[in-house]
Length: 178
Image (cartoon, rainbow, N blue to C red; front, side, top):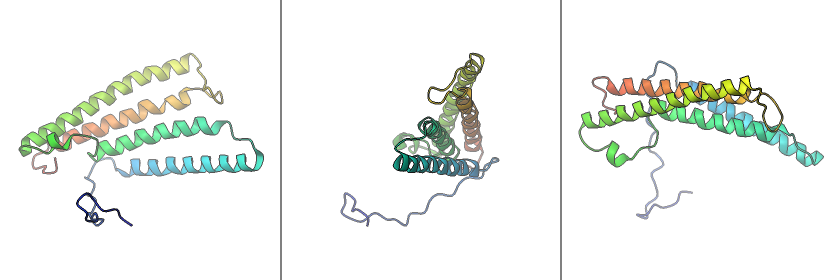
């Protein structure tokens, strides 16, 4: 059942999704990573619920690992949003004006995202190195902290590269999708 909109009419559920742009690195990477992470989260949570129901105890590692997986899920989702140019923006400004202005704003946005995630990559490499060098362990189960933190610079670098790819695609002549 669909809820009526403010005008009283039912929303149109037949609006097709925009097709993905062609990229050098397949967008299926982020899609499959999302599926795998969500499946792991569901399995871990389900196993913990069963164990708690039948034994009145729980796996100690599930909360720590679930938090880690949710962070990875957010980063992978961010990478997919950047690659598909679906990241948040103010449409009033992004879609107004001439095609050249829109292309320029799209390129500027992609460049700023690339810069931000490049800075995240560089600073998080230092964090991972410190975790490794000082032998930091996770608070819940005591595994080396760098096992978790190594993924931040890797995925942030992937987002940086996706943003640079978007920057290049938006600068190509004849690109009317910007």
